[in-house]
Amino acid sequence: MAVLITGGAGYIGSHTCIELLNVGYEIIVVDNFSNSKPEALKRVSELTRKYFKTYCLDLQNREGLEKIFTDNKIEAVIHLAGLKAVGESVHFPLKYYENNINSTVTLCEVMKKFEVKNLVFSSSATVYGATETVPISENTPLGATNPYGRTKQMIEGILEDLYESDHNWSIALLRYFNPVGAHVSGRIGEDPSGVPNNLMPYISQVAVGKLETLKVFGDNYSTVDGTGVRDYIHVVDLAKGHVKALEKMLISKGVESYNLGTGQGYSVLEVIAAFEKASGKTISYSIVERRPGDVGICYADASKAKKELGWVTCKGLDEMCQDSWRWQQNNPHGYNVETKLLIRS
Ligand code: UD1
Image 1 (cartoon, helix red, strand yellow):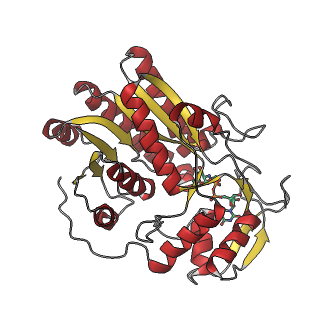
Image 2 (image 1 turned 135 degrees about the vertical axis):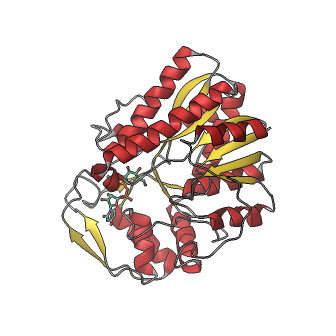
């Protein structure tokens, strides 16, 4: 029996593949490589010394998806595929609704047809929007503030409806806080296309000399030093959260949301300082206006995941920065290589 991972070549997907393979799961990856590279999967195989099937397919291709379910014995799906750039989603909302929602609906229909009813879904803390209080628990009302976030919130609703219609489903909605870091080998990491939008890849590219100066978006929030506070979580801890959620889905029924964060917030200036320590480089930065849509402070109450999944984070901010830096130094241009990999279509 195998676990199908959609979007398995992406940043979170590739780390999740490693953790699943390391604990003995058979995996199958499906990815359309619209925002990821086959090289990531080649390195997953090298690091784990394990082979797995990879399909190049868009999830909206129902026929192709059905063929994957016919040709393989799939017992569960970890669904990570989707568009994820907040800014782009504001300019091209229909593209986001069309892609993220249709692909999830098609996937669920095919799962239903093949009686595969165990699903781990990649949601985001962005579903909470601007919250009144922290820490944020799963009971905090949802209120995504951009099209990307709304696709995640809508999909959560769709999956809850699906469970209501058929109590044989088992669905975990994983609400990620801010994933950063990289695999300790320095071989797998985040490979953003173009200029990064997110803090950690931006800092790494300043440190390695690709970008000149970090713009710090606002220093007048009600936080420890005025800069924005977030709950950064090491991507390997996050990947392990998927394994724990999968284990639970395989033995119980229901639909449950889980915050995957550390429960600890750090400001932008604290992250800069930690990165300088990890890299030995000085990060040039300047304070600019707040970024529209940003909230001042956001961190998780992750106690539900601890209690129900037996999952806790192990890696702190220093390790996140060290691992991000190792990846950045070893791969200054990301996965910028031609890869020969047997990819099915
Ligand atoms: C962003 C997304 C969120 C997504 C998450 C993934 C927005 C509004 N939200 O969250 O939907 O799930 O990434 O990790 O885009 N910062 C700077 N300078 C920069 C970049 C960021 O000062 O160049 C600051 C931000 O103001 C914020 C913190 O760093 O205080 C983290 O920003 P970022 O990494 O973009 O994550 P989020 O905004 O929390």
